[in-house]
Image (cartoon, rainbow, N blue to C red; front, side, top):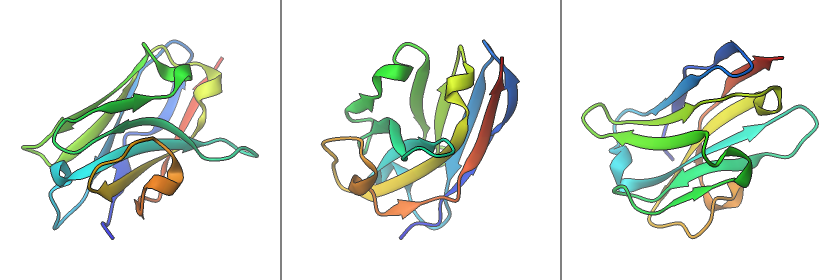
Length: 124
């Protein structure tokens, strides 16, 4: 399993933006499918955005289409989640996950390696 670390979470007002980063050491993230997930209190973990290896296909949750994007910086061995037009409904702990090979969906069960998460809080 990969030792994944998320960063970039914080507190932001509604309509604002945040960029989350997912990194690791000892592994090349471009070889892995990467997913961003979130879990709000009392709710199940849900897939937000997932991208296949080597800038392959992406999967978006309907709730974030047009607002969130996922990208890779292979020079820095990072994967980003850019979140724009945030609303209080986006408040959750956000997790980065990785899976060797290709994925066909963006579900938590599709991924083996997980970070510990970073809190995102959006005020109204």
